[in-house]
Length: 189
Image 1 (tube, rainbow, N blue to C red):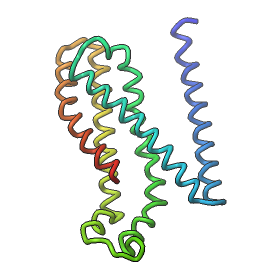
Image 2 (cartoon, one colour; image 1 turned 45 degrees about the vertical axis):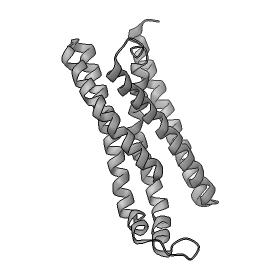
Image 3 (cartoon, helix red, strand yellow; image 1 turned 135 degrees about the vertical axis):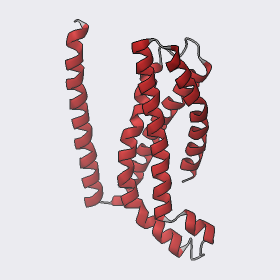
Image 4 (spheres, one colour; image 1 turned 30 degrees about the vertical axis):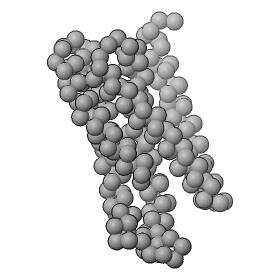
């Protein structure tokens, strides 16, 4: 089989896999809404955290490779970029979490825990609007970093320009700092 005939076949498999995933997600959401919602939400949250970790881990290793160089990362670059691309989908899949968990955060911020009111700082930090804004900032940073890493890597492959290598290095240094801060705060959230 030559490489020309492989592209359309892979695209067909990708579309089929996406359709199966969308149907399974819809079935899980409907089942969770019809029957007991709490186990379905906990399962969704667990899977969400796992797959977000895959995308973020791939992006961190990719930035590390761009920072330190070496030939070890060339074989891993495309799979790591694909993993980092996962952050776009996880941003979309965060929307149902917000929809279902924001009322819980609102109750927690206003009622407290076990009848004990929360401090003013905790009430402000757990405010659903502030929580949602932080989540948007986290995913915007992750998606932007992944997009630039992928774009400049593809440009480097096309042109072979050392300028692309320099841009990737200059993005990866601060990107790892942004990554560390956002992942830390997101894990606390």
